Length: 307
Image (cartoon, rainbow, N blue to C red; front, side, top):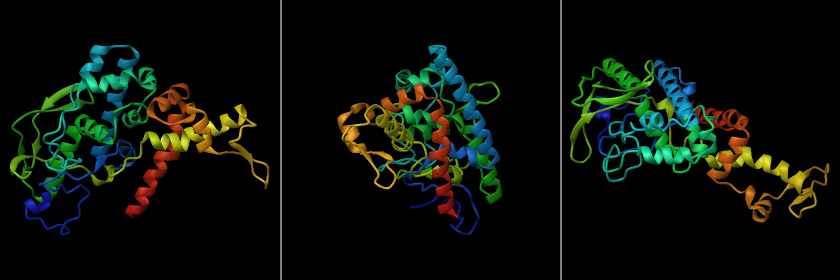
């Protein structure tokens, strides 16, 4: 297997890099964690974060105002990225052979979400918490597309440092313009390498390692376990004080809940994105609580493991 650096005869370990060094013959199962953008000191990542927030503001306003034409236009520019080496494809590289992220799929998911339709969501990664069929891979790919120009600028800077030649791409790529708040196309100045088993030459986008992870910090199961379940316990104690799943500690008499029994007897306390969507729609403050209690904790843990 050949890496990006090895292709240019740069031995791994001979240079200090802060980007993911893609394997050219196969994809590597990493995702962009959009929440990690918040913590990066990298100037290109900071601008990417700003761009992503502007995109989300435009999309949430379109959904709240039921401006379907604008929502369709905003979500019509998410091709499967084929130039980062990130993903989960086993027999190909850069998502080759997989489908683009269809606009109807995205909009169907968003229209079924009360939180999205209410315009409550502020950050792209929050879509994972409440929207069916949108997961880490989709958010990662959408982030790549929205912030493509910033990652391309970062790539060019890294190549200049390493003495790697770049050239203009044959085709134009779409990116979301931070200033004009709309999608535009541009040809990019990027390094080119032979991708895949067939050695098809194509461009490379380098992604900073600090915003990548195998499991991203936003997950509806994390929301259910860490935010929703404590609320459900409190509610159950008040509503069903004499239920068999309620018990008291001998030490101080504190009421506790046998969660499995609670969920078995009352299905409304079970998980699922639909339930989490309703919970967020009724309690918007829980998004901030999730960010502070769960996402931040996972990021700091990951950062500690990297140290």
